[in-house]
Image (cartoon, rainbow over all chains, first blue to last red; front, side, top):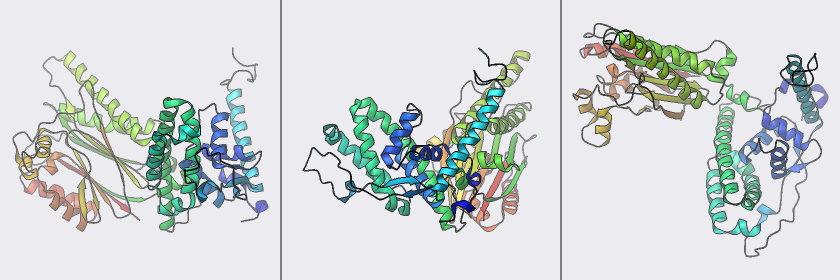
Length: 137
Length: 349
């Protein structure tokens, strides 16, 4: 992995919505795939529903770019009411992901970039409440 | 909740999802299929708690996800195979920014019989790299109909409107933007026709066909109305991508006549869809294209005269520029019965 200090987080901006949401979801701790999907959906009131293909496609690229790393895979007690159902190794291991230092810098840089855009929108009175004249309506 | 998951519908649905996973590139699948399946199971379990509607919504999401992700993953694996070493930087756009060089030739000819050329054509490869990246390159061929130069007006309106509407549409879903652009062109032609008839009740109605191709990275999006065609030459095989909206094409499909008979059939000029009517239905086609493939758009002035084999041999053998010239010359050799128009686009390395 290239040295975090050496890389410019701004070079990766703007992030795709999927990548930004995944980084946000991981900002407060490591999570497995479905937990990320759930958090994204909950935080956007269901407006952004990320599917497994988009999620793992993004994660694959984020791993390569050093934004996230795979944390220790761990078994999770998945409740199975039906013992006849063959579970196999598939259900025993879940991959968890966590932010790298560089990933944290990138998500911060993206948040700052968006904040600046929001500020522009406010000064142009597109958003109520924060315009130079106190905002419309 | 486990009951909900284990009911029959759940198992059937999971089998379907497993099967869909096979559509991903192998390397991606080997790495992530089991994780995706786990995520799917969780999602299904949660959705099933909300009953049928929840499950239906989940599948809507899953299919949308699949289409989008498949596109990105296949493009990405293709890029890696091609050894271009594109750093994906966690963003799909970079993958899609991969640009082909397009070798484009376009030619239209009045033919030997007609007094005016009612065909129009347009080829746009935007200089602006952002526009090219977002919308791709656009190619349009249109065959106008209507006496007293009305056909020329209609086909010119068609190509201009499609260009302007397509590139000004902020919608980033290319097929949708393409369909909307053609629908808007249809309205413009219909209104122009209606205005002309209001001023001059004896004015001829006007209409036009169109075949449109957008090349955006590794994908060809084709759309058509009427009997102008899009073909793709891939690996020495020429395939007609669009389906003609013509009476003779229907007869061929029903097995009543052969394609060769269709070229000279008395109803060969009858089409059942065109631009210039109050409403239009646009057919859309999506194909992946690779380096070395050639896309050909043409009007019936060419396809009614030349056999597909001759089209294939010409395009395989010559550069786009020379192919276009030879094809039009051949149409005129055969009597040049109609205006003939062709655009040849080769996807080069």
